[in-house]
Length: 124
Image 1: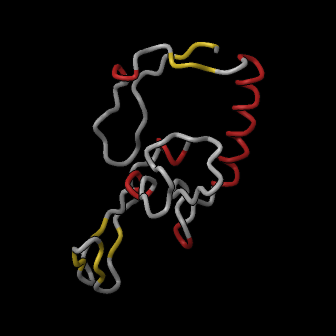
Image 2: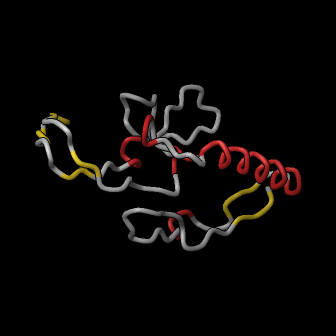
């Protein structure tokens, strides 16, 4: 789920340490860069059929928690909390379904944090 619609759309500002070409565009050493995680998490070079939501995806190198020296220190705790929350949620409800038309989801126009303004669900 974090690959599909993670809560953080982009990272904070980074500075290119050297000239690099990405997708035919040269980014010069010293230039500011703001990586967009949403784009990285839909990269067809990393994800087979990237526009398909698949919670059972076996190869899932998503960027929701960063990578390397920019890896989120809270990621292990967030994973444990999510497992506990979803276990209880699905145990109590048997599953959830969207209770509103998907086109009615209102995604705020932000650049850093993201999430729908309202999400109506029902027990499946």
